[in-house]
Amino acid sequence: MKLGIMQPYFFPYIGYLTLINYVDKFILFDTPQYITHGWINRNRILNQNGEVRYITVPVRKSARDAKIKDIKIDDSKKWKEAILGSMTAYKRKAPYYAKTIELLKSVFESARNDIVELDFLALKAVCEYLDIKTPIEIYSKMGVVLDEDVTAPDEWALFITKKLGYSEYINPPGGKSFFHKEKYIKEHIELKFIENMLPSYVQRIGHFEKGLSILDIMMFCDKPAIVDMLNDYKII
View (cartoon, rainbow, N blue to C red):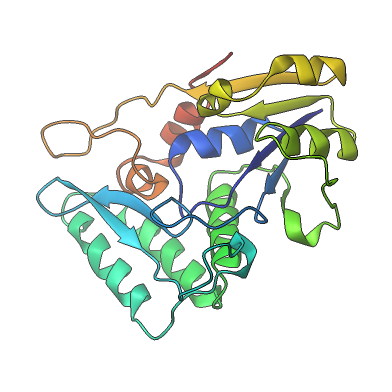
């Protein structure tokens, strides 16, 4: 049985969805320290000139050591309207604009002021659209507490995998530099990395920008094409 664990991201790139689709259970790890300028409250799309730009959910000021689970959305700013306004750059050229905007609006209508909940709702909506059946849970609500001696960057995933009784832990390739396989072998857990090949698709901008938010792919590609992209990966 395969387990995947990642920090919650806002409408992440397709590699994140490939991981969810591949594993038997996926956990949003929301207890680490919140880092600004990451992917938790923002992602990348295209503007009307075909250039990459960010869409961002503003968050309230918090202590430097605040955990992700404690970060609240700053609803004093009209962020929903701003993001929806940014998405109009796709209106004239993206064949699936209406469907994607409908999904985005449904997520925004259900969201409260919790960034983890927003990311969770967004993931659930995209997974439902793509028929991804993998159960998704929020770590802080699971009642699983890390032991005090779990301190190294690669040990929390090992601890959670072992605690929940899974035999494989799957991570994106970015973790290869700090995950030590020996630790996992010692605990009889198989450590693997899954890398989506980020296949190109027509963005109608004269070139291809890879690794954008899944929203960009949903704008230009139908469901069968996206499913094919989800399955275009290699296991390391």
